[in-house]
Each structure stands twice: as C-alpha cells, then as structure tokens.
Length: 158
Image (cartoon, rainbow, N blue to C red; front, side, top):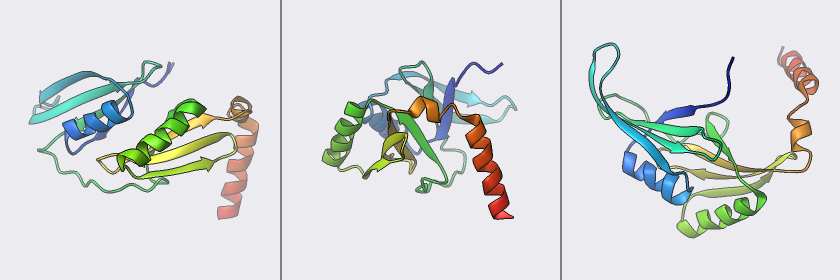
C-alpha cells in the first residue's frame, strides 16, 4: 500500500542555481545529494541527484545530468507545475518576496478552495504556492462529485 510521497524528481540545468532557488528563496533545505557514476544498466555517467526536504518529510529532487540530452523549456501551468502548500500569511510574504527578488511572480489566484501564487524556477518549471481556504478539506473529500465531473467531462468531449 502506498504510504505517501517520498520525492518527485526533475531534471535541472545547474545544481547550484537550483539550490539557490529552492533553498535560499523557497526555504526548502538541501538535505541529501550524491553523485551517480554508473547506472543500473552499466552506463557510465556523471549525474548529481539532490533532495530538498519539505516539512512533511517528503522531498523535491533534481538530477543534473550534463551527459544526457534534455530539452529545457518554460512549462505552461497546464503542462507541468509543482504545487506546494503554505499558510495564508506565508503566501502573502512569498508573493512580495518574489516581486522584490525580480522573480516572475503571478497571482494571487482564487481557486475557490485554495489561493495560489506562481513562480518560475531556473529550469523553467512553474512552482505554485497554495494556501488552503475554508472548506478545502470537504472539497478534497468528495469523490462522488469528482467522478461526476469526470463523467460529464468525458461526455462533453465525445
């Protein structure tokens, strides 16, 4: 049985610029990093795998793999974004911190059950900081509504 998220891993262009964003700007501590010199299939590589811990013990992780081709592009929110929970007060503080730092900062977006702001990290990934609103837990605990919305969506597409 799945217990929870241990880590999500993404490619990065440069481990130090990624560290500066995730540790210095967002405040996620760099807690582990190791070099991979050989893959399980025996291919030689020079890859750094780094982990940034969140308060719940899960992590965001990154691979800097200069020997592996990868197309870095600015992601659209609908294609890929990483949503991290913060308090409503921290949402306001981080919104201002992003603007003060000259980092692309969008929002505050009212999604009904959450409020969100958005940044772009040095790799082109969209980072969403989100704060729960009153009624959040009830909204996220309504599988009947979710299945009905999915069913309606599928019918509309047909």
